[in-house]
Image: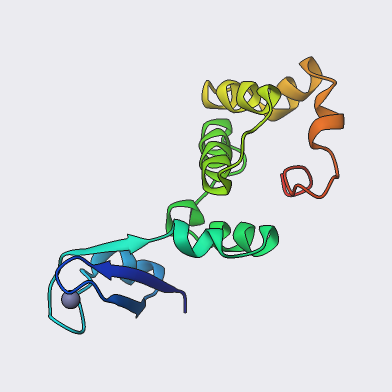
Length: 133
Ligand SMILES: [Zn+2]
């Protein structure tokens, strides 16, 4: 079962909840120390502390992405944009162009064909941007 870390804004403590994806959508977390509902989910702190690989894993665990339809270019584009933001790294111009075109609904195949240099930028290196898609 995945867990989610929150920061309580009333008592300042960090609270961890074990929730299923379904519960995450329906349950309002309550601070176990002061019963406040004024909690903010911690994402980036956790993500930044991890290696790149586990960062990818935790991203794939994100409930918002659990229903990602890889056949849907717009969903894929939004996923890639979110992923690049999560990684906090400057992405090459080509990446932003690809994301933009995906979000407009162009198919990955069509984009790939019109940008042959993509194979060099994204294919099979250790950045994790290539093979998973
Ligand atoms: Zn509290």
